[in-house]
Structures are given as structure tokens and as C-alpha cells.
Image 1 (cartoon, helix red, strand yellow):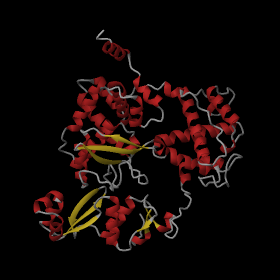
Image 2 (cartoon, rainbow, N blue to C red):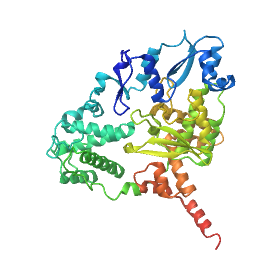
Image 3 (spheres, rainbow, N blue to C red):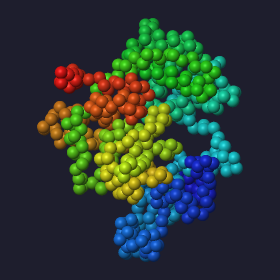
Image 4 (cartoon, rainbow, N blue to C red):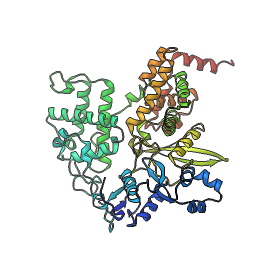
Length: 497
């Protein structure tokens, strides 16, 4: 964390134009509380808290922790720490400067020290990001650090503003794959495969490849040469072929759309969507096992911290009833997502989850009413208002050590529920327990989709929008049913005849 203590050295890059913080610590703290939508640092006395509320009863309801502390101390500090509001006597609380530094560090993607941000106060012009190369494996950088004949290096239409394939690949990985470690790993693997093939054919760089070259690569994936010595000499599975070509097509489309290439030689490289039409998810849990997990989550856990339990229930509810991908619950500071908002329709509170999906596309997922009390309880235990405000900028799921809970933490929480439920039903249902132990959070997404498409026959375009699928063919894959389900549909259709 930066050692800078002058708030005026920090710039809020989330504002348009970027805004420099006040040099006064108290003013800077007030600005953060207003822009982030939660308590940052508040100094309470009995007189001050009485002035905020109409009655003593209202004061106890609105600020119970503060009121308890004020019974024994003249001054109480309420401050934000590691994703939740804490209270302490003034002598025991951290200094305003310390709290300010912690909050700025937690939101370091938004707030930056002026020399590092590249946002001079006079112009607001950003500098080119040179850190993106960290997403490219080091062995590939030297091979990629050049530009081919189709690279649009010096033209004003090159909106990437880079001069070689290495930097262009880095920006592609950052924009299209950086939110999911699994996607990033898969993209890197396919880029290595393409580069290995180019080296064997004495072709390259990537921005020099023609359509003929890419068609030859597609043919090599389908029918590898027996005398080749590289990794492409092995038979490549059909699913791997589809993934390899999809990554290549995505790379060149991204380069063409951003102006780095003068043309897209991979246009039409992937046709027909054969992998999508054959998609039929099998990894999902039957309703009985899901009900067993629901029952375990709903129980009280007297041995655990109340906030930890509430967080676990909130995580389970969002994956179970919103069908989101694992990474979509990880806080993105630049996009300020995921987040919740609340509308009133016919005097009923309607909660909606907004997430950042694949390709950085946002989508809104309405939440069923049973999620609302779970999320309210979790928010209150964190020290947040029960209902999210329009300007709130707090991580949806907090980490116990500060900031947002990341992929691995979210995965572990859901996996712990599967394992605990498996231990409970082991004697009564050995096969079900084994299936739970092999399950992952993504199985809940498959189950959500299957419930929409098969159990309730939601129209495919509607289900596609809720799931964030790029193609309706992927959504249609969940409609594939076994013979017993087909028989039930036929019986229901012709039962009156």
C-alpha cells in the first residue's frame, strides 16, 4: 500500500472527469462515504446521535452498536474495515488517516496516487497501459513482439494504440478472459497451440497470417500430420478443435474490431456451431439433493460467527436462484458490479442482481422473493442498510480479510455446503453423497437453466437472457431430455383425447 498520507495526492478515476480528493482528511472521508454509499469514518457523541434521530427508540434501531458503546464511552467511532462497519471507543479506534488509507487501498483500481494513475488534473488524459503484458506467458512474448503485414500500427483507427502482437494479445486476454482464471488458462493454451503450429510451418507473426494459413491450421487440427513433431501431431478431440478455432476466431475478430488489423482473416473460420448443437449438460443435481443442501444451509450454526453464516447463505441463494457463473459474483471495481437494486412494483419490493458476464456484457437477473430476507440479514450484519442504495459501491460478497471474496473463496463456500450435505446423507443415500462430493458451483447454474427450460418451459429467448448465453443454441441444449421425460410430455399432451 502507498505510504502517501496527503489525500490530495489521490485521484478518483471513477468520476468523469477524474476528481482529486480534498487535502483535508475529514472532507476526503466524507467524499468517500458519499461516493461509496456506506459508512467510512464517523465520530459519534450522545448529542450528535440524538440530533440525527427523532427519538431514542429510533436511535437504538438505527445505530444499535453505537448506542451500546456510548453507554460506557463519551466518543465512539464507526468506521469501515474489511468489508463491514465496526465500532470502537475513540481511544481504541484507528485514526482517520489510517481508515482513509485502508479504504483507498481496498478500492485501488478506482483511486490511484496521481503519478501512478496517468490522469493529470489539467487534462484528464490517460496514458497507455503497459502492465497488460503480464497476462501473456513469458515464452510467447519474444515470438509475439513484432507486427505482420496486416497490422495497422500507425493508423489512427488502431484504437488499441499498440505496435506489436505481444501487446495486442495481452489486451485481448485482459478484455476477453481476465475475469475467469479457467478461461484465461484455456485461451493461453490455444494461443500456444497456434504459435507452435506457426513455428513448425515457419509462419508468423500472427498479424501476418492469411485466410489460407488459418484454413490450413483448421485442417491440421482435424487431421494432424503423422510426420509432425509438435503437439499437433496427436489426435485432437472434436471439442478441443472447436475450442481452438473459437479462440483463434475471437482473437482476430477482436483485433479487427479494435482496428489493430486492416482485415479479419478468420472471418467464417468457425461455422455451423457444431459444438453448441451437441451441447447437452449432464452435470447437475436432482431436486432431492438440492433440497437436502437447502435444508443444511437453512439450519442455525451456533458454533460459527453470525456474519460468516449469513454470508454463506447469501452465496448459496445467489448461485442457487440466479444461475450466475462463479466469477460473476466477484466484485469488479472498474465496472462496480455485481450489485443489487430494488424497485417497488404494486407495493412489493422486487430485487434484481446485476452482473458482469462473458465479454464484459452486463445483465440483470430478477431474484425470487425467498432471496430477499437472506440478503437483508447478510447486509445488516455487515453494517450496511437492509436495502441497497442507488449510490452504494461496496463489494456484494465481502472477504473476511477485506475487499471482495474472490473465485477460490466463493468456490470453497459452495463446495463446503456440498460436502457437509454429503456427510449428512451418506448412510441413507451413498450414491447421492458421492454425486454431491463431485459437484461444483457451476452445477447449480446447470440446474437453474434446466429448471427454467424443462420444468417450467420458459421460452428459450427469455432463458437465454437470464443465463447470458451468446447463442440460443446453448440454451436449447438444456431442453434435451431423457425418454421418461419425453413420455411424460406425450402423456400430458394427449391425456384429454
